[in-house]
Amino acid sequence: MPKIHRSIKIKAPIKVVYDYIDNPETNTEWMASMVESRNITGSGVGRRFDWTYKMVGIPLKGSSLCTEDVPEKHVVVKTTGGVESTWTFDLKSEENYTVLDLDIDYRVPIPVVGKLAEKVLLKRNERETEMSLTNIKERLESKDLL
Image 1 (cartoon, rainbow, N blue to C red):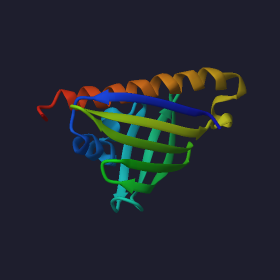
Image 2 (image 1 turned 180 degrees about the horizontal axis):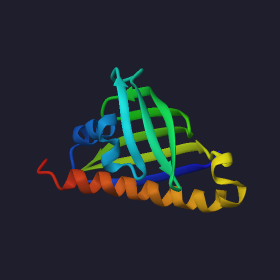
Image 3 (image 1 turned 60 degrees about the vertical axis):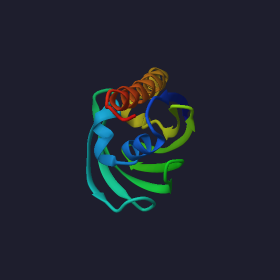
Image 4 (image 1 turned 90 degrees about the vertical axis):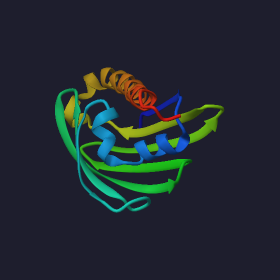
């Protein structure tokens, strides 16, 4: 199962960063290749939502379940369907910044991409993860939050 780890410093209060990443309605704003989040129910642990995500141009549909949610510290979301994955967000305050660590463990849907394309897809997913964190940083730092 491939794993991605990325970290970014965001000049925004930890509550603002947490509220943003913990809200499935914002996924399409920051998550590269996320097309739609819908059918959102609940909050915190047990929150569920359905999604559509494009992987190398192929739309994949699935569901997510929040399995851990410690406000302003830690969130874990597990996905099933088109892509099986676990997204772990860890937040900590550091001076005037929030450090956001993101770990993603996922299973490549080989029938979708084919074995030969798997290596290319893994690199693309790493780039998209970096782009997603940069999107969070840019969106939150552009707001007058401090």
